[in-house]
Image 1 (cartoon, one colour):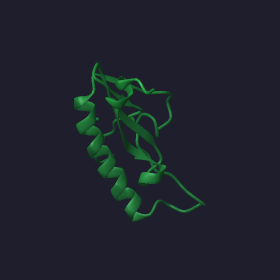
Image 2 (cartoon, one colour; image 1 turned 45 degrees about the horizontal axis):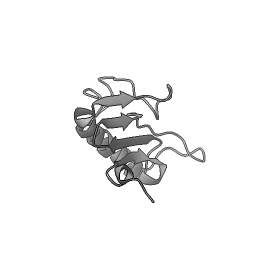
Image 3 (cartoon, one colour; image 1 turned 180 degrees about the vertical axis):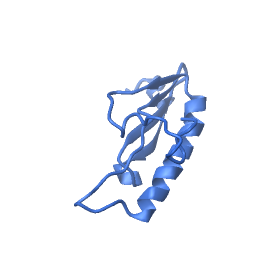
Image 4 (cartoon, one colour; image 1 turned 90 degrees about the vertical axis):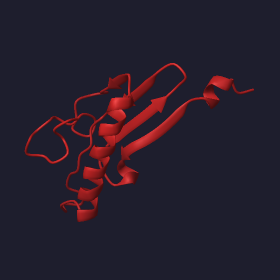
Length: 99
């Protein structure tokens, strides 16, 4: 039988390969804590090609969505330091200033 606690855990993928960016940003909410895992989002060459304009749009959308979830989270983690797991701030990169 499944413990009822598992039924109360909410998980939301925010940014990942299948959502159009190189990342694995994930938000999880339990009755006790709200956690944001790996708040980075990035793009890069794929098959020696620059990212498609749709991927750039998803990059900006994902960063905006991360802004919302970083405010909701009580705990923010970074599994390791690659730009797809933690994005450094830079005033030259749109959408990063407040994350």
